[in-house]
Image 1 (cartoon, rainbow, N blue to C red):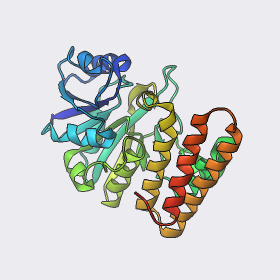
Image 2 (image 1 turned 60 degrees about the horizontal axis):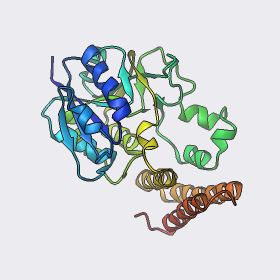
Image 3 (image 1 turned 60 degrees about the vertical axis):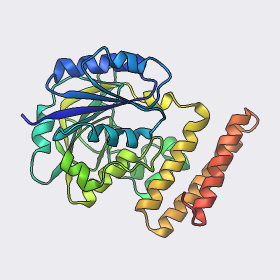
Amino acid sequence: MPRVAAIIVTYNSADELGPCLEALGRYAPEVEPVVVDNNSSDSSREIALRYPVRLLSNSRNAGFAGAVNQGVRATDAEYLLLLNPDTRLQTGIRPLLEAVSQPGTGAAAGLLSNPDGTPQTGFTVRRLPTATALIFEVLGINLLFSKNSVNRHYRCLDLDLTRPCVVEQPAGAFLLFSRQAWLTAGGFDERFWPVWFEDVDFCAALQGNDLRICFVPECTAEHKGGHSVGALPLKSRQKYWYVSLLKYGAKHYRTLAFRLLCAAVAVGSVLRFLRTAGQNQDAFEVQYAVFRHALRCLVGRTE
């Protein structure tokens, strides 16, 4: 069996890391755990050292993409299993490995389930986002009218999650890829800092290099969801998400589509400000920062 290393990026993950590593050891004991800690202020590093892992401790938050690349470089394993610390394997990974070993395949993903056992429909697998899908997202249309055709297509609500198939964008919480595919894609783009859209961009890069991604529902992992981003200050979360969204748009969309996305983000920030007006100063500051960034991108500055 080829060597497989699990890359687990932690950021204040003390409450989740132990069960993640225990499940990995139970269901996939052949996998070598590599924990990359992004300067946690809790006991994440101490908990990692209770297990047979290779621990890389950063003195600053290198971001999710940067930490993943760091973990990949720290091992010479042929295959890399990307696991969020709030996942718990419920099966082995051999079917994933068999899928990703096929010629022309760059990655394979399993099924993510909620703690109650239901599949995480709309999250575990998505299609690569079109500009229209993200415009609907930032304007709240997908939230208000979740059954619209654009949202159904984007979130793969038409997909049978019990059947294996080729997909476009599985979640990075439970993703196996080959080292060669990682090299071909140029690794994870570290400009998506600290988090969001780096896994979407990686999947787009694989397909841009004619590498398919397989969905293998036989392999499952329970996923709590939102753990790492929940460790970020509330004031920063929205700003980071929109900045990463616009970086993705600048990289992948044509000029007109990107400008329309920028305008939609600006309009959406105004609508959110009006909805929360008078509630607190933080809400105003976040929406103002998002608005200003969207306008800068609209006129051609995408830093």
